Length: 309
Image (tube, rainbow, N blue to C red; front, top):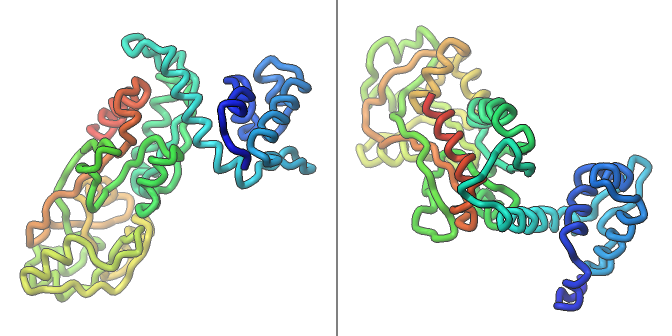
């Protein structure tokens, strides 16, 4: 890549950046020209300037259109962030209008939130902010914070074992908290009454672990009491886990709200845990650079309202 110095920076203006993002979205120069009210030669000239600046073709011609290079994919979140910051300098925070704001939001979430919280958020935003596009991605726990730092995500939603509260790089919001329960199929002999610690230790357990861990907080608390869970199955997805316990004698620990909302759909039942393991907390994490962003504050306000229903 060529050095980015003051001379090279003169090759860049806002239109060039918007053309780059348009090419990433449409993959055709004619579509970008039409969308932005430009001529196709103007789009081609902007692309030539970008190729010179970054010493990379950025987009390769293919039969189906333009294919972004690896560098183009790497640059996209950074350029998107620059355009957003420039846009925010022209906004009065007191006059933020979601209906007239045109941008996109990239949200990472674990599988339960992807199928419960995100659909409600998208439906609501289609009404309140029709020009804001939502891009939702499966959240990989080990990569979530890096994705926020690099601008690949605007918000990460999920349960974080150790939320980064003491790191000034991030802002952590607690969306809700609740107790854990022990869940299994309807008619499970362990769940006809409140189970004891001994009952829980002797049962065969299923563990949901999107991070690949084989233990969690429940196991640590049990160990301190001299007990150990018999974990027989580990799966990465909550909904595959619910389907498994519905049709087997495996049991699992769940946040109470998750069990309550799925007991009819999956024909499961649940009881309180025989031991206190602390509360499940759903977190929303964003980068500190967005702490005062009217857009992100508005997003979180809607998110809090949705999860409180």
